[in-house]
Image 1 (cartoon, rainbow, N blue to C red):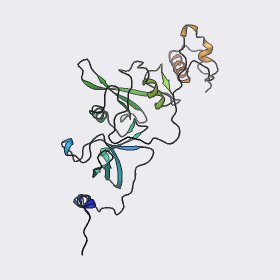
Image 2 (cartoon, rainbow, N blue to C red; image 1 turned 60 degrees about the vertical axis):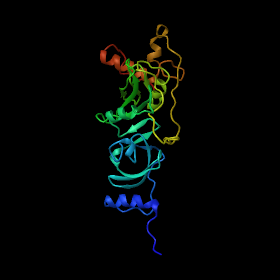
Image 3 (cartoon, rainbow, N blue to C red; image 1 turned 30 degrees about the horizontal axis):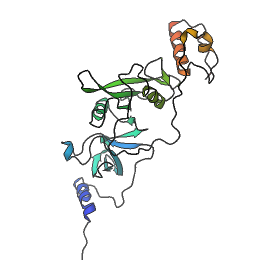
Length: 262
């Protein structure tokens, strides 16, 4: 008796043949343990219900064939070949690489997200910079997305407002998850990813924000700003840097040439 391809592989082999590609004998898992891959578009394009891979789903990359990847949805188990440009990498559950402003809005406005859902994405216009995108609800009870540019000091610290600086993006997210401090709302859950019950994160411990007691500026003196830094200081290194930069630019600092200890 002759034997033909099994039903399990017949569909994917046909799809590969239509694309002029050969079905790999043994799929090779390419997904790194440092990030997950998320689909940004429905594929095939058209109505979401008719797509094998849907926007917002976590996908496993089975094989890399240049601009086309063979992937499997973690949400549905569906397999398909999709363009590699239809995907983005996600680190620490919320930090996206290769995501545009428009696509960030589309993902955050999907049904499983709610007010406070957010993501951090690389800026496509300013290399090395980031933006925070947050879903909010307007007065008309309609959802929209607000974007905040995340600036970076020369020492590598991050901030949205110059008076609040953070050593890492994780620390920034932790802070705005507890207090709004000018944001449209508290940060809630990261943008929902279908099929992402457990998302691996980058190896090594994630830096945590250190919450210091509130500083009463009426009791502050110059030694707290220009004195030597220690662990008990109520003025963060980032705030000291910001004040120094401001005084230098305004010409009000008589000792701006002196570098603060770090």
